[in-house]
Image (tube, rainbow, N blue to C red; front, side, top):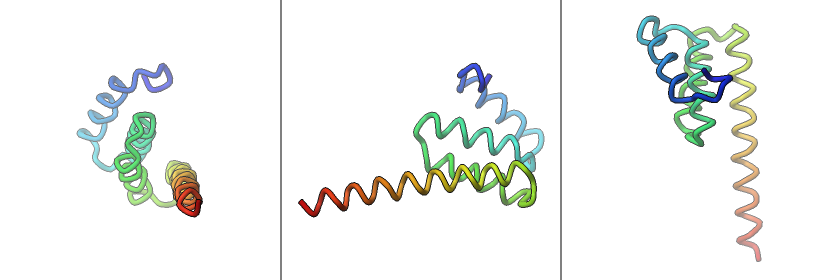
Length: 88
């Protein structure tokens, strides 16, 4: 579903996975990606952080950590642009 860009359907699928197993880091990671696609960064970060918390040494945690770094970098870029605009 996610690869087909059917995000609502994918969200339901992964939510069902989390309902069945609340310690399933891949489902949290995928939910994070879904929320990023919806421009809901706060919710995306919460899901990505949960994926890391559940299994910090997993491949999923490493991917989530990299995604968080990208998000934080974009946020910092926006902040810098806003600050630069205020100077003028």
